[in-house]
Image (cartoon, rainbow, N blue to C red; front, side, top):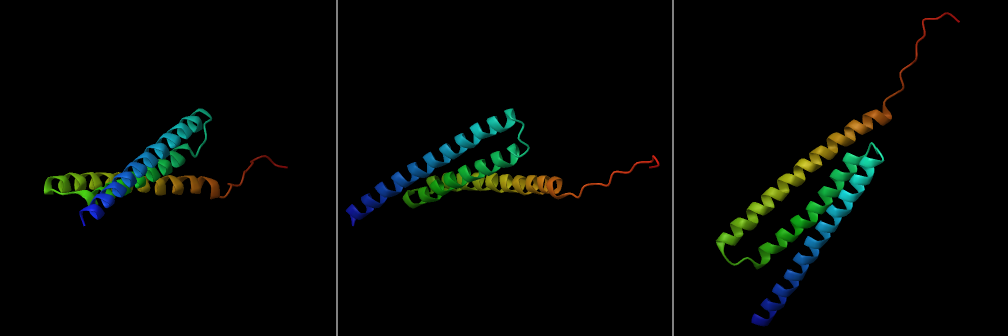
Length: 122
């Protein structure tokens, strides 16, 4: 039984590292794309950056959830729970920003063109 427990801890530790690494890579790539989008004045830069940050935070949140598997003390549980709550709140706020940005850019793209009036007689 002890050997099974140590194998589980090893798998969970590697999975945590993998998810943390993936989260960092996604956030870094999104940041670089955001810089390029800002320089090229892409109107969707904020939306793309927010989506990338949200995806990176999802990976990091997954690693925190896995971390609860190997927690042994209540102090660690409270620390991990606090981190999960903070990351969940950040993810919620970023998704809220994405919805607002999509609504804003969607209105601009789908808004009907206004008729052009001229007061001159033809």
